[in-house]
Image (cartoon, rainbow, N blue to C red; front, side, top):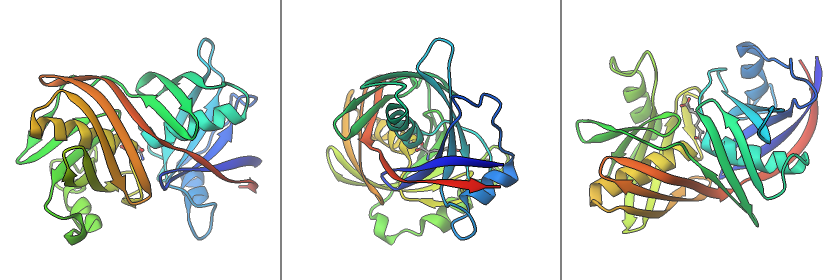
Length: 258
Ligand SMILES: N[C@@H](CCC[C@H](N)C(=O)O)C(=O)O
């Protein structure tokens, strides 16, 4: 099978995008996904996103991690919105379906803002916060991210007895200022550090509001591949009006045979 693809990146979280609007039966198996995402023998990416037509919304995005597993991807959603614009499916506003439900998004110059699903609960694992923002996240505050080995730390948590079966994404966060954080992420499904994680940044921002006990969330988060912004409202243990904001850029286009 030969098909065209476009490579996108959102703060260094990179994705192979495939326009399936005229190919509703397009499918990839886990082996094909892993091969396409391989950085030496394939195109190279943290994941693959298929864009399909939707009966009532602007489009549907189907996200796969590089191992073929599925979840919601915040940075992938921002890239999908930018890709949908290039396909002529939207102009500056989008409504789309993803694995965790319906999302709205706005393109404002180079920034893409995606409304995330409401978060209605969280738990704690010792001092870490466990928050599902479309994907499950373990959020641990540390004194200095530069002193941490995220791959070793992430693997230990992700493959621990508690999380081994379902998996979890692991985020280490340093507080830089009242509204500035720096974070590292180990992603399940990629099973490595990624340069950015949108659902992770969202979980980190929500956890920070719990630590400092404030309601009006508006934080800038430095990730390895750039800067993300998260805005949200907290009401005790629940969160709504959650927005993940950041850039999403086309890197190159190509054609591949598998
Ligand atoms: N990179 C993503 C998260 C992708 C899903 C995650 N690896 C999982 O399986 O939970 C993001 O930007 O949110």
